[in-house]
Length: 426
Image (tube, rainbow, N blue to C red; front, side):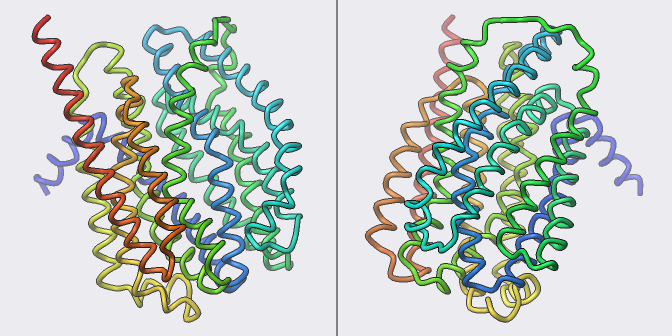
């Protein structure tokens, strides 16, 4: 009992670990409901229709790359303004971002739908209506990352956690209702739309103290300069775990694609389970960097936490594959029991890569983007040329991500070493 009290006291004293646990619990609750959502949809729609839904979601991930960029950029500058107590600038950034993004969203919808015929032909989809829902989702979800970015930058992790939980719970409840009344794929997409809309509206309550501030205008040009490398990084990272799904949907038959995409969904449990670590790491490292204080320990702590989580989940996949598949997907998906352990390793590697990339972004380092680009190009070419089986695609990802992780580690450690040496010379 005494040792437990000592352990809890240490957690309370360690700000990074304490905030990570808070967000981890919230993110896990959101992800539990998110995966209940996916597994419920998979069971009700069957492999073929679920393959269509999962391909659309993969396309959606690519479409919402700017959303992650928005949240990361907002977080970075809110952290900066927080250090100097410039809360009026935070309000100006918040309101101006929402206004501009709504205008951008409307323009995007028009352009996106104009290419709708090409998209449904490439993905072998018979209906145009799901693309309309995707475009509506894009508009509604453009503004949610703004409020979440402000919460993250202010390090209001409890409020951010509550917002995550609300998204997951509402999405699951909505999809049950819509599928029960027979809306199918369109009902699943509508549930995602409404969960984002509800989460955005509720986020205003957490930011009411900011809304009471008087706006302080400032030149926003430097924000756009910073957002460009964030956009590129986020796009490339998203491409790593979506380009394979899109190519599989293109090359494989509907049933096989459904099996692969169900395997991918199980793999993403690992990625989402570790997402809380990055949410805490980014604003804290950014703030320490602005104050010229050490931040390498936070990187190593983050990698250690991610490694512990990913190894635990992946080991569970290897030990109990049949139980996991039967529990979550049912008998129709039993064939994927041979794949989920390997895909767990794939997403473990990706989770570590993600942490390293955003650590570098938080200290304004962007050279790693060239490394990412080369590996994405290699992934697309290799899967395009070699796709005889699901296992072959997974092995391609395993090999590429192993080399990518090693390359990024070397890049980061070398750059940190050079910075330390230069500081010593000065």
